[in-house]
Image (cartoon, rainbow, N blue to C red; front, side, top):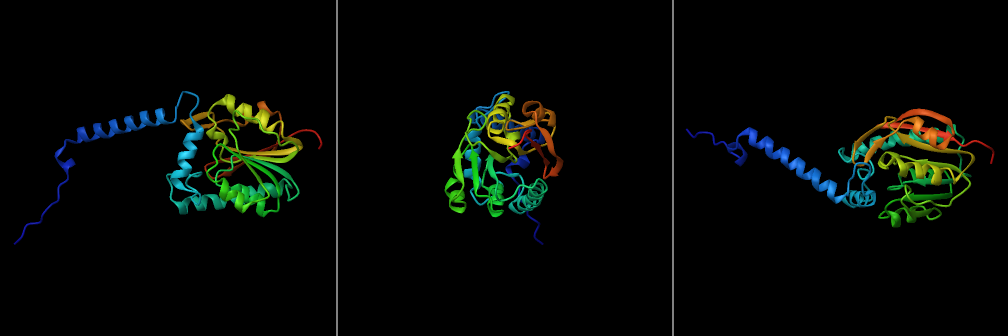
Length: 249
């Protein structure tokens, strides 16, 4: 009678305490590598390089590049399908129809850009810190203007917008001064009186990682000085809310 043969791995001969220490060391090395590669500091990182590499890794047709990279494509698709319904519901509730002038801060793969396009909006400027997806989104939406721009340090001129939106973007501007710059210059100077600014956040004053930081509603209100147009509604893993600029267009 033959005895069962048990396949042994090299790690079976190593004491568990050494295995744990090796894994811990690997994690530390990976963290050091990440901090160096993306020039991570206490209050900033190289966002352009980080997002360029992430988009290249996942490709244009994947939602993992802009969504949750830890989830599969199907889970991300389900999340974004629910997000689309909420975003469109808010646009309907705020009476933002086809004739508006719009600007998107951080278009990514163009998921939310397409929602406006499919709703008949034809006057839109879409900005992003990287431009790998530019040939694809421009082909799909030829009437739109797409521009590579670091919205945390570069001001754009697109005045008279009835809608400016910033979906799943503000948390990736981890430097408060850069987000303040974006709100004052790229939102404040381009939003028309009576116009609406839609934004998402987890609404906590907390930094989760080198490329994610949440703020509270008061952070936005103090900088913009706008009234709340739409109270926070659950939006995937965060909240979507909106402000309206005072005055009449």
